[in-house]
Amino acid sequence: MCLIMEAADDHVDGGVLAAPSNFSMVEDGIYRSGFPKPENFGFLTTLNLRSIIYLCPEPYTEENLKFLEANNIKLFQFGIEGKTDPPTLMPKDTVLDALKVLVDVRNHPILIHCKAGKHRTGCLVGCLRKVQSWCLSSVLEEYQKNAGLKWRQRDLNFIEAFDTLSLRQCLLSIMYRYHGYGFKRKRLLHEEENVQTPKLQAAKV
View 1 (cartoon, rainbow, N blue to C red):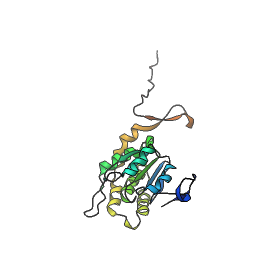
View 2 (tube, rainbow, N blue to C red):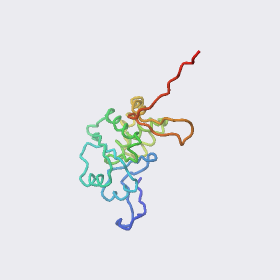
View 3 (cartoon, one colour):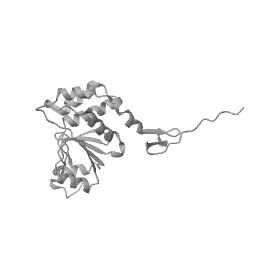
View 4 (cartoon, helix red, strand yellow):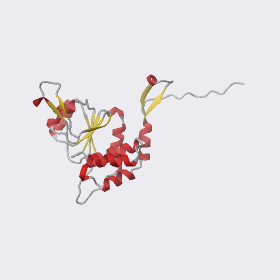
């Protein structure tokens, strides 16, 4: 889905902000798209991105790197081949590493993209949906909708077989802990923080 928004700033050429190809929101603070072009930079600034997950092995273009530097956006690159002849399988360990970055809210708002924003991006989003406990039919339907007529059976097989238990340690290290009751008392703790657990005292006789 390609979005075009009215520009808030007068300096934007043409008065519109053009989103990258196949752009859509996955969740609040998580976006997906094809490879951003310079004409998409104005739109991307409206997302206040903190990070980008890039799923191709090719080096990031110089103009894109300059855009990231100018906007203090961190790049996480995971070089996944997208060849179809011969077809290459999605590397489970690499996808898992990318998921660890994706589920860490310290990296949000975040944009996921490969070249077209269909297959590699679709596999990563599909694995995220499994972590979110979506039913498998909905996960695969979302992948096919975004991939269009060029959906790949091997990608569906990869998503279906992906073991979400392998992400358990990451999710345990970045979790919500509650102190007392009520939403306002909730805060996000990371594994580097020292969390004190109350000790039970034996009753004196």
